[in-house]
Length: 162
Image (cartoon, rainbow, N blue to C red; front, side, top):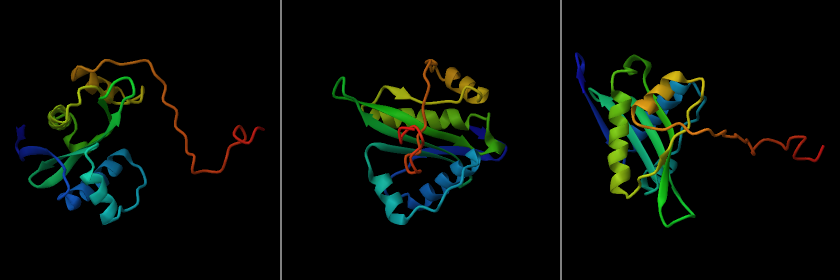
C-alpha cells in the first residue's frame, strides 16, 4: 500500500523488537483511549519471546501507525490452537486507508506459518466500523456475549452472597 506520504510496511514483532513493541503498544492504548502504564523491559522481552503471542506493527516512514496483538490458545477438543485477536488499532489519521487490512494479512501469514487457522476477534456491536471491517475480511459474526470481570477489585455483593 502506498500513498503520497510513502509505503506502509507491516511485520510481526519478535524478541529483538522491544523498542518497536513499546511504541506500538503505546499507540494502541492511545487509539483506544485507555490508561496504560509503561511496561518493563523484561515484561516486553518475555511477551515477544512467547510462541503463543503475535504482535504486528504497521510503519509509515519508520513511524508506528498501527498494531495488532493476538494470543494463541490451546484447544481441548483437539490438539490444536486457535487465535484470539485482542486488539487491532490504527492511528486515526490512517484509518480506512488499508493499513488494518495489511496488518491482518501479515497476522494471517504468521498464524498460518504457526499452523493456526481458526481465529476469533471480539467487536463491540456499537463499533460499526470494526464490524464492517471484519465482515469485509470474510469474518462471520457470531451471536455471543462477552463478560468482563475485574477480579482484582474487592468482591461484589453477589460474590459475598448478599
